[in-house]
Image (cartoon, rainbow, N blue to C red; front, top):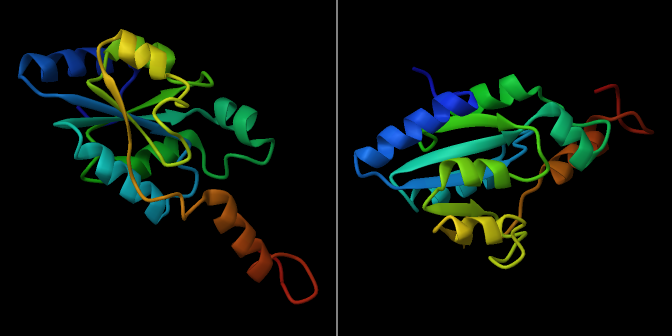
Length: 166
């Protein structure tokens, strides 16, 4: 069995992990262009539990959140890249604006979010608490962002007076 799972297979895997006494952390995001901020976030999330489930925004969800030019990398490729990280145990794709339904299905022990939130502003925080989990803020202090990376690439290599074609 690989790391990338559909919802029912993921539920079975999490149930099996729990039966074995392991604690589950859930992290989520777009992960469009994987950068050091993403890696630090996921490594810190993994330290919060025995297993890390990563929920990846679908292409449709990414477009609704970030606009018509996103994602740059298709969801299956983003999942494959994340699967190469040792700190990630399971990956699933979700299409909703939040992971609330996944939280209700998996009841993670901890839901990890990045520093662009506080525990109280995490959209799913009520669902996490209702399911008996806790919300933690992990990773670096949002010094890295995909939008910043895209902007730098366009400034250096994009069309313009000094740039060529990307």
